Length: 157
Image 1 (cartoon, rainbow, N blue to C red):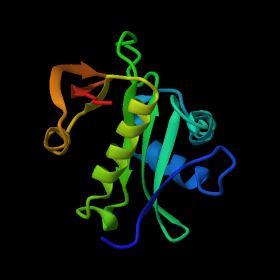
Image 2: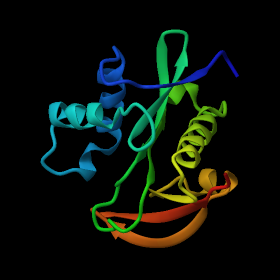
Image 3: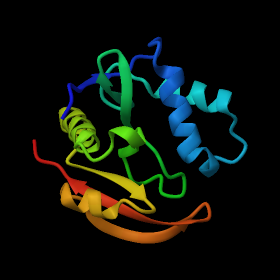
Image 4: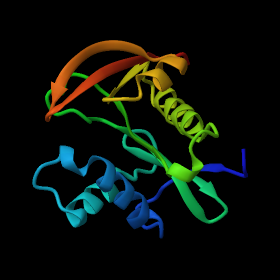
């Protein structure tokens, strides 16, 4: 894998706008009424200093190439489930190099360090990736017009 480092994204980072634009392009349709600007501001609030919420970015030099987040809530219809792995995204030209797995592992470390023994995600189409990384299917449901699988990861301290 090319030189990739995983770093915490802070709210005043030069990369917030770029990374927020990726996540809006990928998942903005799941948030009716949101605009690129409102999404970016919400994203900026997710860039915590540690614990929940936190956003991590895979960097190649000074260029972000992927992201993943640890959020308190990612599915408003299931508020009892917390926390969530969310916004796992790698630029298409950087896929297939294990970057998503490294980002996911970094978020898992953050969840463990924050005292969580399990956490959740939902995905319409990446179940295979997550199963390979130790996630288990919890349930399948329709969420905002998409059939998704909620998955669970048991964490070990």
